[in-house]
Length: 117
Image (cartoon, rainbow, N blue to C red; front, side, top):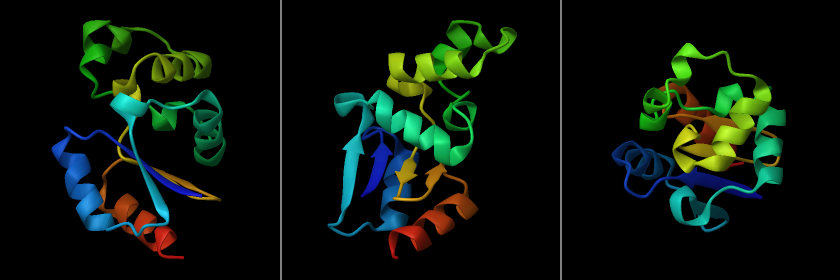
């Protein structure tokens, strides 16, 4: 199972998908319309080491809700991501053994290598 979670309206995600050039064996999941299942998020957190690693502090809701001033727990990060898709860092590339979160060049290069295996 190889999956890429992205937001269709996000230009950064579009560029990342173009760079990754996933084959037909990779399932492309649009998080706004399809969401993310709790068990999949839990698997991602297990691979990444935390829910915080999957959390986007760039989300507008993060600022609107004043979350930067709060001390968030791992359970808070999990709940927020499940509550609203914008809290999930993107894109997320999930393989059988790893997760890659975000659009940093090194992250995308590692994800591309993992997807080609």
